[in-house]
Length: 320
Length: 215
Image (cartoon, rainbow over all chains, first blue to last red; front, top):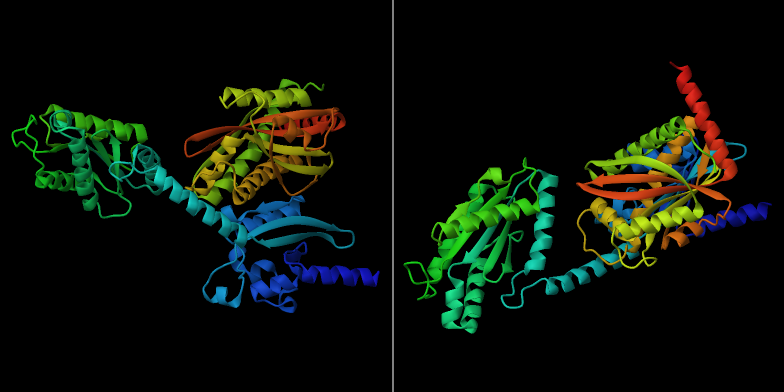
């Protein structure tokens, strides 16, 4: 019997899993060597103290709720790294502790019913840093591949597919954080006659020059220029209010005028490439969705076309 | 099969709505935005009918060929006053959606990754513990709950994985899960043997008697 107890004890000390047992009042009755090593708190200090006094940050969180579930309701709980972000202050090494880099952890909390001393609970902690790291790498690689399938072959800027993903993400982000997002729809004026008269190769050159001129003016990394369709471009401007969006639209419009690409067959008086721009903003207090935002910007763009091209029109806020 | 009266059925729906309400509150706390959950209805089915229901629901979702759809299940075993295997089930693509909404933006992979499976298990754990917890409290009985187990497979495989055989009844909760305006429909199945079902009916009646007595 003693041999068996000794065996169990040495196993518990040797396993590469954190094991903590709490009694019915939340006092630590077992704290294995893995816990001592990664928490920096020796077993003789830990045993006898209240877990939530030893690690006050666990109070009021999911760990305490799970301990209560186990002690009071006899239920087991699982806390994943993904949803809980390293609840216990545990470190892989003293160096990691200095860097403030917590071990990524999965936590399982299960009730233990001991015949003589009532309900206890077992907390098991596993280091999932390896799996988390592997997935991070996998996601980065996937992201890289995705970037490649998300760029426009001709101009190198984001393609329509990338735009669809980005606009969805930015609208969601704006709603979550109570901020706003603006969208510009930009169309090259009289592009069909340009293609017809100068040929498709020069048409392609024109698209490349216009897109790179536009791209060069977008300085924030969060702004996105995408080729929306044929000669139509879209610019997503996160956290920009209508005034800021209009200012950027003016700068972009002006830049294309200064490019001074000759266009003999345009309907405009200046015989050069110009653009029309529709501007729309989804304000924080509006209920509009992605489709409404695109619809409003599109609507403004067509208004600009109808009013004679080579101009900027801002969508009225009530469209959203 | 045991028939529940309308009153018993409504009481059960109410009990589970309290349960998923608590689960939704816990999940709101995790993601920092509103999560709502409700149980619109409960049906009692045979094991075969339950599998059929899941298949049909899946097909209505317009996913691939009949029989080829995969269900993602998180199951837990409960025992005490009565024994049951509780399984939270979503079509696989819906489980991807839930995890991604809960975790926030991330690169979508074709299947739930290891870390995402663990997150899904935690979501299942919260929902199942809340449902069974409310039930246990109201019935004034304690049940011991195991850790969650994550599985992916056909509805047959998921229901079979619990090891329960033909002599069982499935109490199927329809669950609506709303996060970020996305409404996701899922199921919680409680696999009960016939005696457990009788016990359940008795407990509901006792609960109703107590509730009526208070008036």
